[in-house]
Length: 213
Image (cartoon, one colour):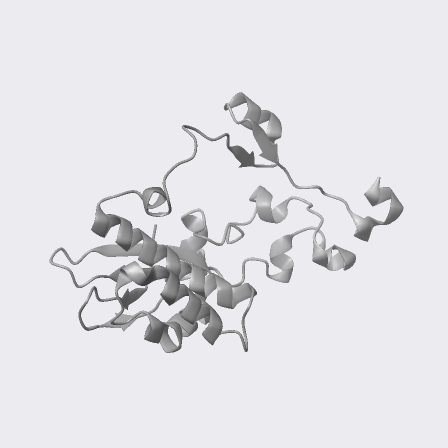
């Protein structure tokens, strides 16, 4: 995987000493690596972008054949790295969608709620990031940027505590969980042992009554 890491430093009971924010070095490098958090940042011919899939832009004929034609993967991923100021310089990594725009939010807005904070106050940090972005956020790219930071903090906190994050969240409730595959070939998913599959529907309301059938 080729990317420039996002560096945002969160100190553990001490002062911040550095931070910056970046994303993959280019869209082509993200595509060649198979995509990051933005699963639609794929090379031409990949089923998830070039298979007919009913979507909000299907009402426009010129955008039906390929979802990349209307920019579904235009933003790309944002990668956040959180470094704690403990003796081991613990590092946590979080990834989400948002690309350069999300990097700008992390660098110029969200970082103030992370720098110098105790990472065990992860709920406080999230609440402050969410409330501070209400005037332009509540969903979409703002939530995606917050998610990258939040995931990085949880990752660092788990490493700091030397425990899996699910234990920090209250522990497991079952020994195993069934999983499904997102694929255009549910038959192959079944052969691989998946309990279920989520597959795209090529037609919908944009194709009229025939499409609904």
